[in-house]
Length: 292
Image (cartoon, rainbow, N blue to C red; front, side):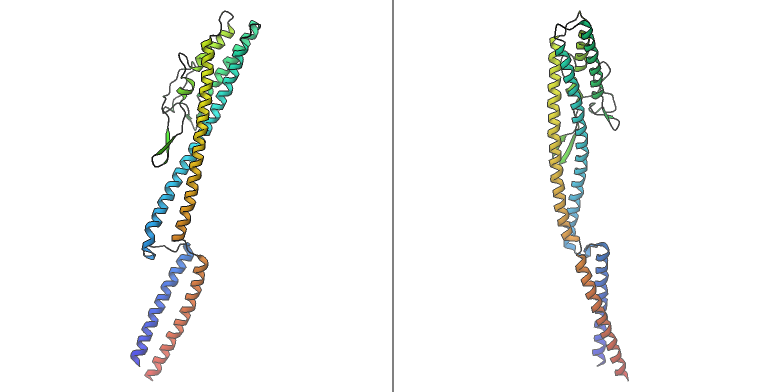
């Protein structure tokens, strides 16, 4: 009889220990919201959890980079839009200057207007973002265009990896946009036109008119290309965000605790503990009677 009571008592002590251990685990789940807090909780789930976390972190990094790149490209789009508007105005003045009925004073006024447009365009070409010259290539600390229009940057462009092995250009070459015409760049071209307007003895060179149109076409096509790149980045960001949501859902299935279920199990464990303690107390009482 004593052996049976002793065995029962030992069994109940073990059961109480198991209940307390289970209760502690459930309490940790309730506190952290995670059903896996240690490797030992579910060794088979550790690898997929780590894989999903790594992929989510990588995707978030790609998304942050692409958001920054979109902001930069939208600035290029804005500045190229400004440049195009200025060139359109210069073209209008140049076409109007072809009217032989204009007085010398009117031509001189138009020349000053073109000169002002040139200065504004030079400001666009020397635009900065966060203290960096956006049209200077890799030489972003160097003012790309001198007052006479000389290009001092380089024609390199920056790229961004938006997925493993997939890159997109995130900058625009100032040399390609503003200094690709021959023999003069756009600033020399506008200066030539302005000078011809202000001096009755000089005719506007048809080559300068052609160069002006050529740069307008370049700015327009470059801006369209920038728009395409922005759309590509937006699509890539949307894809990444959807993928991250899916991965977070999968990750949640592996590691997130069902708080309602955890609360229910805690109540069950509390009931089981009370019952086990009651049985243990009863066994103890029977053991005392057995000695009497």
